[in-house]
Image (tube, rainbow, N blue to C red; front, side, top):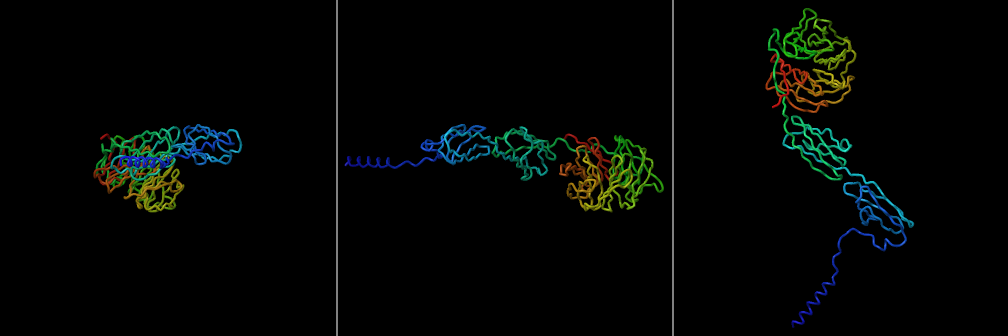
Length: 448
């Protein structure tokens, strides 16, 4: 009985051994019989080396290599991670040696960059993106607040990140090509904040006082305010020392001056007399001008040497004067009671479109460059040396800050200061006319 069981067990083992083992999965390889026979040697190189080589979709090896291939038409394919693949057709029609030596070009990489924290980074910007001589991304996409997708070539990269109210951040990273890299960068709060450090004047009609101040301008050591409620100009030194009140009688008198500029001598827009008044350097009266098509409620004014821009509010127009003579005007931007205009360093006009609650960048000929919709009626704006725009929001007791292309940057709260009407930037300080308080606020960026 035991002998019978042993024979049966031995037979079963033999049967199992006879079952073929499952085939191992691998790349198809050229059989030796195909590499023998009449044909030629194919040598394959690549820069960089190590690329996978397929001939007729069958794996051969990695570069550099040589293989004998039968006669006929063949297809050569090279692939290396991070690089664009290369495919070539060739005819191995005779004995001899064929050589292929292609350059492999790196594939771009996708970088997803998230700015850390729960803050709203809608206005964050990527700048100074460069690496290994490759400047700028192949493509750039903002996926959401504080989340960017950038396609970059392989290499060593550095990127600087800017966001309103934050310290600039910097990242350095290396891309080999063809990968997806996720990066994060926390941004710390800015250590500086605009703070009220002083003020000029008080409410009233005496020396050193103001009633309903509006426009503000400076030249040299002179700070000049359109003292609208007192129908005059008020002049201080830049360090706040009272100089004089500029007031005239009779036909020369101001009625309600709202805008003031230097071009290079003082020029004043008078809202109620619908005219411009030109003064001498010592603030004595020079002349008045009103064009054939009269101004209607002229408001903010901007000056350059020999050239003036004026917001002609109820004519819905911007006027350009050359040496006191009207040289151009435009009203084709859909303006509604424009309240102010300023020259930018790019020889463009920045318009405070009061009735439409927007800012407008335009050429001096009236061509629209860009615009920014607001949620308030903007007052008389200021520009700093970098082209940033400071826009007073009177009822909101604040100043909103925009970059030179009108992207929002920051909000400066004036802690309830009555109705900011106009802003002037001089040497790192902001001078703000507080209309209902009858004074000029002075702000500086201070460490917190």
